[in-house]
Image (cartoon, rainbow, N blue to C red; front, side):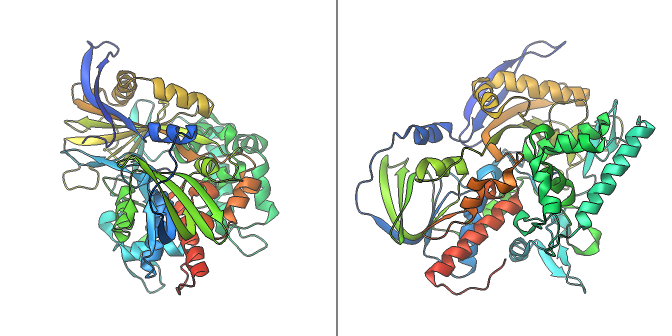
Length: 535
């Protein structure tokens, strides 16, 4: 899996909806309808922002964007003892799609909700996790020792399959001989890809993906969709294809028919978690999801973050970068001049503010996240409650339990964070439908889905908050590896640098972190600041 899931949601409009469910009387459930500040984004798109006034401000580096990539860039510079930078964030708080909410019960994710144990090649990320105390040492072979209290507790994941719960996310019962044979063949193929190295000596599939082999034997997979590649292998078993569909939607928000075969294989073959004690296949999880990491990176940038800033122009003027930003609170525009600017924003936003940038080949998946407050935790036949719970009969991607790591995790009350990738429609149509659908309709969908998995929750749901992500993640469509716009953005140099998971085509924490660190190191090199590279 890979897009991990993430009180009152910041920025949400308080509301309550009339909710009708099959066989039940109409009830009203408290809740909020929130999301990224669409009005600020739409104002940027319309170009309705005033010309900068007042004195220009100077900073050696300006970071435009406070998601994971921007925060990683700031963290890396601070880590290297470089502090002459400012970070400008569109929203009222940093974190991007790793943000979280909170209630009297617990913190809970609004987006990305976990981090798999990193691969050996993710050196910068391993360094950061060590600095944050999540890695506490190393064994005799040098493998990291992780703080066991931040590793996902048992039971990690389970599947609701044919009326009962089972451990793991692939069905264990009711499979034909052919289903089992195809599953074994698929698993063997992915294991072989995971072990493979290219003719350049690199792993065929690495995380970060920039460290993957460029051997055509593997990169040729990018020419077709994952669904086409699976068809070519004759792997059409319904349970197998359902599992693969879940995986593609969970990590990429996209149907297998629209995912590059390279990206599809990468999902299953790219992770080789490096850790002592045999926990390499585990995840780091927190009640607030990846906002734990975002918050720690933001703390490293203390005093240098300015929120509520809509950057609407970024241009190179000679050897300087000029950044124009609209300050929402002050209701005026302001200009920065810097020796380097790091555009830590999605490519479709960068294309609106920077001359010569194209985003025509980039598309983005919309998501909906709901945080369901319950007075008592669900149970149901089969295995006990897991951190990640998925129903084979549902269109949703299931839910995670925010209190799973706590001592009282087996008791109520709790918050169940529900996810769904709106992948059935084309992204633009799905976004439009998402923004026009009222809170009450979202609450009905979420409540019905939860009750289908857990009838025992009838009467136990006390609150449903809904959060919408219009452009949650870039979609790794066929051809993304060789896309000229993506490759051009990767190769930028000061004074304008790009840093975002879009540059990888994979919306993963590891990718955003790598891109942010890389941009920061390029900026420090250009400015002559000494450091030892983490990459």
